[in-house]
Length: 131
Image (cartoon, rainbow, N blue to C red; front, top):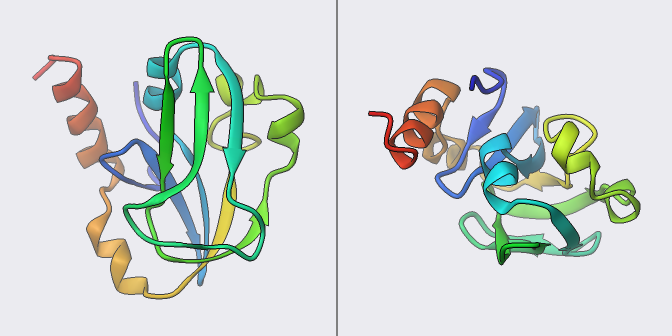
């Protein structure tokens, strides 16, 4: 599986799309497939603050409940309300329609802690025992 090369990734399987100081965040295909059928999602509300490496919500699937870990610190400036009505979008379009929150990043230096697509793909390959 190849991952979009315009995104940055965390070891917790979230992605970040950086546009100036706005960072849009979602989960990766690997995370979505590992979770199985997604039942519900609960995200921190608009105007909340998140910290890099800490939760911004919870996702529940038929297999488990997991925290969603933020790739950056900042204030939530947008929440994708559409995914509450149709969590199925996470199974078919995690990188576009399946985005979760957008954050006004506080420290662009935090982006240095994230993985590019090649490093993330290597992480997933190791997790799946392919390397």
